[in-house]
Image (cartoon, rainbow, N blue to C red; front, side):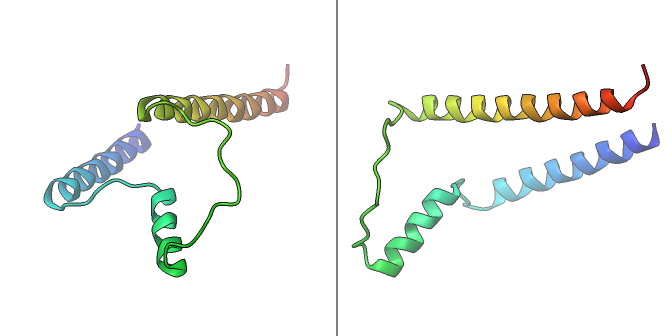
Length: 93
């Protein structure tokens, strides 16, 4: 019971800190792809040409987010199955 309270307090502190920082600054959410693109443009002077083009691009940002979420969910299921399988294997029948 004590561990759950400690974890709950830690989550509450991080949530409050996140909400405070995001409401008091003009920070924008951006991914590593956008940051890397900016650095590459800065280093090459905008002359960089990608080696390969994507085979398919989602028609909208919402679909892209959906596919990313599905990928994360499938990965979580695989990892959860793996841990559950091996934990169950260690327990006597």
